[in-house]
Length: 636
Image 1 (cartoon, rainbow, N blue to C red):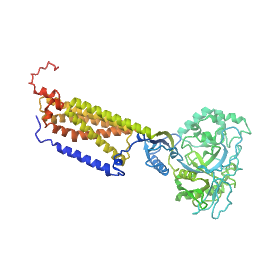
Image 2 (image 1 turned 90 degrees about the vertical axis):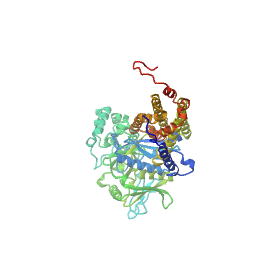
Image 3 (image 1 turned 30 degrees about the vertical axis):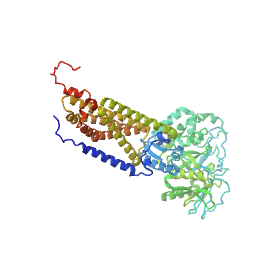
Image 4 (image 1 turned 180 degrees about the vertical axis):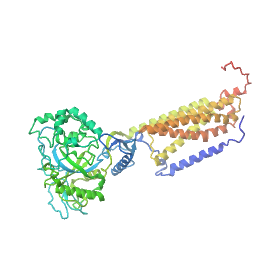
C-alpha cells in the first residue's frame, strides 16, 4: 500500500543539507583563516605529501625499560615543543603516540631535529674521583680541560663580592657569579691533577658494589653479565676499592679483559664502583649507555668528559628542575656567556652544594678530583655525559655565569641544553624520516589520481547500469567530496588533522562503501516495482527496507575505523580517521540528498521510462499480466 501523498517533503531535507554546506564553508573561509581565498581552501597536508621531517623518540625513565607516566610524557612533550620552537622551527608538531613515544613533525622543509631529544635530564654532581677513560692497559693521562668554547666546556671562574681569588689567565671557559649578585665562583681543573690508577679510596668512600641497592630486574641483568665475564673476573672487580693499577700489575689487564667486551647496555647495569674501578671499562662504552642509565639522583654514578676521562660522581644535589632559566648573553666585555638563574629552592641547593665543594667537606674529593687550586669540582651532567666540571672557588649565593671563548652558536646551544634539559624522562631516537618536496608532490599527485580514477569508474558504471539514477549517484559523490574537503580544511585548522597518503587511501575505500549503499537502495526499488507497486509508491517503501541495511553496513565500517584508530599508531591512524569521516558524511548525504532527490524523481515522467530511468526490465515486468504462482516452478 502506497504511503499517503504529502508524507515525504524532500525540500526540507535538501534545505537542511544546504544549511550544513553554508555553515561548513563559512568556517572554511572565515574561522581562523588568513591569506588569499586560495590559501583558505588548502587543507593541512602531511609530510608524505608536501615533504618535511619526522622524528620519533622513544621515552624511558629507568634502565629496566619501564614506560614513563602519562604526566611525565606530557611534560616532556611540552618542553620538547618549546625547544623546537626555540630553534626557530615554524609550524612544527610535537605529539605523544602510545605510552612512550613522542613524534616531532615539521612539514615543508628538511631539518636535523636530532638534538631536540638530547640533554633530557640535567644533574649537578660533585666530582669524587677521576681516572682514565681509555679502557686500555696504559697509564692514565692527565686530566687537562680542553680550551675550547664548545657546548661541553670545562669551566673556570672568578668570584665576585667578598671572595676574591685571582682569575686564571687560561682560555678555558669558566663559571663566575652573575653581576646581579652572589659571590664565589668556579675554576677549571688543574692540569697537574692527574688521576692515578693507584689512587686510594677517600675517607668518605662509598659502599662496595655488592651493597648498592638495585631493582630486581637490574639484579637479574647483572647475573647475566657476571656469567659472561666469569666468576673470577667478577669477584676481582667486585673487590676493588680504587681503580686497578695496570702498570704495577700487568696481569690485571688479562683478568679484567672480559669487561672490555661488554656492550654499553651491559655496562649500564654494573654498580657504579665497578664501572669506575675496572680499567678496561672505557668512555667508549660509558658514553653509549642507554638513556637514563645514570638518572637516579640518589645514586653515585660514573660519567665521562670529552670521551677521555671518567669520573666517579656524587649524588645529585641540584637537579635540572632547580634551574629556572639559562640564556646566551653578551657580558660587559662584549663576550658571549651563558647566564644561569635558579629557582627559590634551587638557589638554596646550589649554595649548599658550592659550599660543600669549596670546603671539601669530609674530604670526599680525592686528589684526582681536585682543581688547580685544590678545591672540589662540580660536574654538570646532561643525560650520560658531563657538559662541564668547573672547580668551585667560593660559595655561590646568587646567579652564575659560564664564560669562555664562546661563539653565539656555542653559547646558545649550551643555554638551550641547560634551559630545556630538565625533562622528566630521557629519549632514544627510533625513527627519522626526511621526505623531499618533490617526492611529496609526487605522492600527492598519485593519491589524487587514484581517487579520481576510483570515482570515475564508479560514475561510469552508475550511468551504464542505472542511467537516470546514475545522475543521483554522480551528484551524491560530488556532494560527499565537497563535504569531506570542507571538513578536512576545518579539522586541519582547528585540531591539527593532517591529510596523508594513508588518509587518501581511506577516502578511496569509502567510495566502495558509498557504492554499496546505492546498489542496495536501487535494487530494493526494482524489487518493489516487480512486486506490482508503482514507481512513486515503490520509492518510499524501498527506502524503508533498504535504510536498515545501509545503516548497518555503514555502522560496521565506522566501528572498524574507530577500532583501527584506537589500536594503531602513525599513518594508520590517518587512514582510519579519513575512512570514518568519509563514512559519516556519506550517511549525511544518503539521508539528506539521495532519498529526497529520489522522491522528486519519482514524480517525473522520465522516471517511468525503462530506458531513461535505469529500472530496466522492472517496469515492463510490472505491466505484464500476473501469472498464477506455481510453488514447484522456478523463474528462469
